Length: 590
Image (cartoon, rainbow, N blue to C red; front, side, top):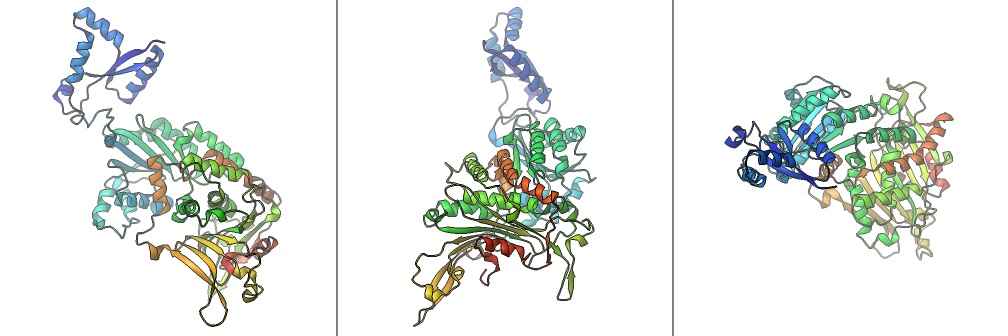
């Protein structure tokens, strides 16, 4: 096919240049491979900016030859060189290809919800406070609630806090940030409402290159409607468009696959950012650094030296009014299938080719696909019941008004998982997650094997577990990494003591640890996908848990009841004992 050219001429009524005010046209020449491509691109360009006039160069040449003998190239040259500079016409034009003049528009869909108020807006402000956001950015709240810009700013301002290690005046920074926040009310399934949002966004973009990020802080049943409307009515026409999707990503393999298909009708995979905020936590991100950049750990990271790995998540409160949502998912879907399984995949993966997102996610998928199918015999489920302690009565799960009285939904689960590959064959990975337990924590515990032929067995006694080296990575709260070792107690006798080599983050680093949402939002803006979940990764995770969940529900397994504020069901201890493991968080030294 022969190459063809066409000229795009524009005259902007908003330009301060007299040449533009007088209607002078300045051409932009583009080569395309065929007439059909020329027509397609022409139609697309005029949709982007109605003030564009698209003319084929062949037609220009014919027209000029008919009027006078002057070369069309000379006419074109005159038009190009008489145009005003790019700095003069930066406002109001449909095209400005300078990178520093691009803008990012962040739309929080579901802006009136708790997640937006408590996490998303504060994270965006923290990024702004740390000068991490682009020069030109605007934040939009979109929800069904009727609200003015001032009301949104007032709502958002109540949850904003400033970094403690900065000197800038906090109130000034808040005012600057809030002035960039706007609100638009609309339905999540209305193309017209999103088109109105698009108009508002364009007003603030002022002709710059348009990059748009949509954060879906809404129930999963309206994800696809919102994505359809955002994609068709409010996506960028000359920059990137990305969508952050909050969990849950379905309830099982089938619903997850249906959600993925629905999203991919309107988005490419690289536009979809499935967020799991646990992957943005400082200690989780440090996990691969700890392993791959320290020679002392990497050789030990296998079945030869590691006896078991424990992934523990506990909350010291119940559902507290969220029972209606929680009852539809349960602790396995809410915590195990995503947060803990993602951490397990990062922990157990082979060394990736590079730190590139795709290389890391490829290795995580390999781990998930190598995992043995979960059996009901390797699972314990529980549900918290009412308990009175210190004169205070704590309600049971089914005492929540939003939960059915006969609900069998587990609020606690413990499971033993296995990875059938050369590195981890036979090593139990024990997961435990629960609500209304005795403490709040999230941690990884790596228990190493006993020292063969230990010289000091007589000094240790019969409880060899007390002498086992253990690496603990405390994800929250009070972030820390510590290693338990055996040590001689100072004195004349030979008495051994279990000591801790402790990297306590608050003591070691004065800088405040960023919230996980800050890191993930910044990565989404930068296009960094390393900490987001790919569709095949999601498929592999659901393939592992879906058969077990169906069996659990079909057989109507009754959960073991445990008192509010206790350590959980006794069955979890029997499960660990089956694999000769003691839960690391239950000892005196934690």
